[in-house]
Image 1 (cartoon, rainbow, N blue to C red):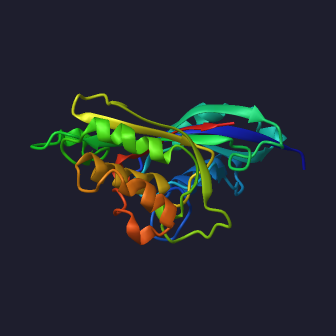
Image 2 (cartoon, rainbow, N blue to C red; image 1 turned 135 degrees about the horizontal axis):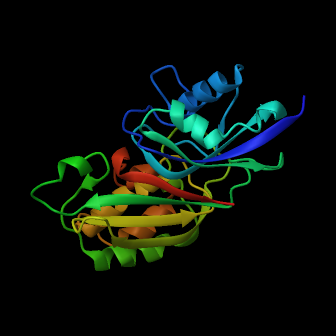
Length: 248
């Protein structure tokens, strides 16, 4: 049977999902997509994502692909899927790609953001599912800490237990801070050739401790060098994290 590969760019609110990957515990992004595509095609269709996002993590530019029989290729996939998907998942773009394309293995890099809420006394109610309330932070210290994390390092100290990997070396191309949509928000943007399990949230946890002077700046280099997860601060909560873009 001849197949057509379709690439999706997805945006979603992760609050009500148990992450990307299909599991028995509750609804997932992958599972919800597969249900919609299967309903359209009247046969089970597997969806492959660029990577897993944890429960509560959001996306502006997650990428996935799936194969359909060529007689289904003419379906207006973006419109069809958006008519079936829940309001917290949107297909931003649907396009034909070659069979050589793979959402995960063809990716060259990914960009995530992590949003901190820097007002001490309150959080706007409609932002609570998208930010980590930490209070004021020293931006100068954050920028100095980011210099230690840029480049190629063994990030084993920032990998939580879970999916085993053979190599924990990653190359961080960019780590910057910018204002958010609201003046109380500070957004950390990070791009790398790949990320270990919960690596961005663990870096965010470190950044928070540096910015609030709970950890000396000099400790950053030591934490990286020791390659010991127990030496790094606790993992930042999921709701501040967003997969912004996958680069191919």
